[in-house]
Length: 462
Picture (tube, rainbow, N blue to C red):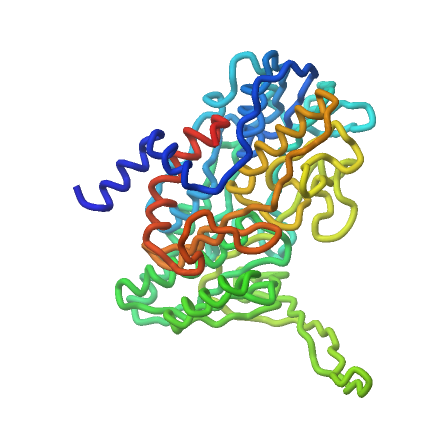
């Protein structure tokens, strides 16, 4: 058995995953059984909702839990990038949600159309009123493809356009990964034919699910070509001002790009419109120019500027703007201003709503400074559940979320930078330099995280 086969075998074992958990980042221990009473309603059955359900169900002696979610299919969303790389198929990343919802939990297979927090109730799409004593919001964030002028969902997968994010759990579809794998191979075919494809990978200005995903697609596609001695002209057009917020990771990614030698970064470029027929994309470019010299401060004034920049392309991978959608964004529970507008207004440490004290959040819907990943939801779980039960018992909320998130940046086939960080900066779980791309993290991500997700995270065991 070679190293690849051995790692895959280990990765399929929940026991091995448990052993690995012993060396991974610490989380709050499971809560002892509680006699707390109260009607709990969980809205959402993605990663956050199922984690909350599993932990609450095991922590309460007499749980009275209702979960409201229309999706019968559960998607392991990190697997879509591996689909894009040609390493997973759709059946590798989907399961039935019924496998994670206990029989004594009422499951209303519907969506919430109205959050009435003043009256402790929600209204479903079909008009059903559901009362609660405590509410857990786990509705995630949605994709706003419609905010890009000239783009429709139907265009993704055609005319050189792809998006790895394209999925619909309610319909049980996750087309983005397979579409992007086809996109990889279309680019390769053009490169083999002697063309020099112009490829743009975009990243919007809004918070997104897994902030490193746009670069993962960039590097994996480039490496897919490189393995056959081929190349293309890649542009990374990002609304951000740098590759990564942490200087150690930023420096490492700059070295990764130097190794490819065919990537041009366009910082401060946010995709606003696209001409599908003529293959041009228009970006809003924000930048600064030097103004007059201030003798008192002994420095130049910096003046904010904005312009439209048009780029031609042969292929474009689009990461759409994202944000809270639907009922939560229209409700009194949502944040009122800024880039987090519409997302759940929770305390960044306790995950309790700042105004409605019987409401808690978990996962991407939470308006906190960092962390829209499955790893973040995993760390939300024990904190949110611990504080919710304390609230039910009339006790002080003592659990604190430290901002933990993790971004496994795939820099090529077989190597990953495992960027773990929290509100204070880098927070590695292992005694290894987190800025160094390693095969170890690739094997961990490809073979081990998925069984850990299904067998431990979704069971509330980690």
